[in-house]
Image (cartoon, rainbow, N blue to C red):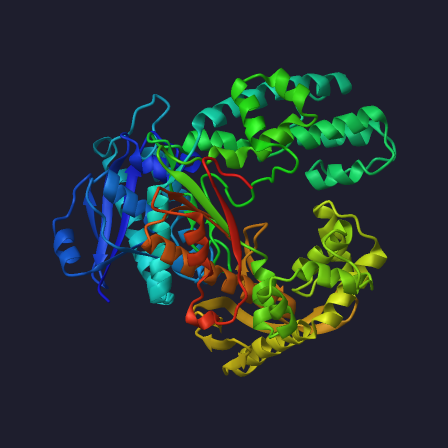
Length: 638
């Protein structure tokens, strides 16, 4: 394949970290400072300024593929600054994501042990040329000719690094390249948002926070002036209340402290911290910051952002939006749009929580369109039973029987239970959805409580044991998967297990999925590891980006976790397959949230057809008992 490796350096008055690449590239102030490019393995050339190399047109005519790191940026600069139709792009960041490697080019180079740039020097040059100085003006290349030469060299080195990444990592398989291109199209299309709602929510949040901080100052005798002063708040509590030893004031810390017998004024202070320390309401300001002049947010999805292939969000985090609970979203939005903070606090006992539940409501249908949203039902549980060949459970799903009640009957040893026994069914539901990946009883108890379901230690143990006794094929699958992965790592030979195959290539352990896509595990190995129960076990490890710390580190895994990876990856492949079909049928996709797809439809589209398209299986998933349900409306909801 003939490739052109490409990188831009630009300037703009828009802060790309704050507003995202979509708004950045569309802003009139954005200019190209230089472009570096290379044909295949040829020399890297750098053109200064906004120059468009005419040879690009000849390469496009000849079918060359353009390659960039985080290609949406290059695609958007090409389209909005050069104002030309961009060619097809491949993306080395997408390749890195698909291999569980760091996304940022510098960190990726470090992980692959490539020559690294001087990161501090690059940051200095970007601050010099790419952002306005303290006078609000831009430093021009002619004013700093030596630094500009270094800047062009910095751009040249980015192309060299990106090209070396491209050599080290395999191209996406054809269908994955199609899915990447679909993601690029969705990001370019953008999602329509209600900026009036976001602006009014920010205003109310500010007014409520002022009142909150007045109360905090009163409780603490003006020692703490804002609930966001986390270190001072923690220290003040520990110094003023004997027997209290708070490690911090995170949501988990505060919720634990609230379970204790504590003075009323401390309880009130902690409740204020819990309520007004929510980061979710900050998404309203992100909506304003990232919205383009046509009312849409762009570059909001990251292809293969999760290690299993699911999309994640950037700019505005759409993947972990609060649920509405008992709050009527439409009523709450009307209250927010009234701009009356006092009315908000009167109507809702926890007004900030109410605000946060309306964040998803900022996504709206544009004029003469309707939002169509469809969500796969319990897809992970369904895929798990299918891959493990747990035929009785697969039959229950196919026959549309209530598998949660079926599980509850075993847990409570009561065959007379029905869906009317809501508490018991809810425990059965969490058992089916939570215990499929080797979850132990203590974790099951915590997970249930996270969903507001109180279960005793004894009931947790009963539920986990009941699941494992009922679904023995699932338990066998955990063990078989772990053995197969370890065998491949130790002996460097492929090993088949159910619908997947493990194999080694280069520095990766790959797991070939039924779709033909691979899960990748970098630098795998086995070593003795001490387990929580005190014994040591020969454990499998690999290197990846930690989801919490974002550091690239050794990560241990086991049969249940590998099973979870496989199941989530297959569920993602089913949804990706459906998204390609929906796009082909002219459903304008704008959002993917976990197992849900959101489209903008018009008169020729219907929710029924959308669900039907989503539930048609590819040949590799024959017999998988998937189902979906959805809604149509003017505003995004749950």
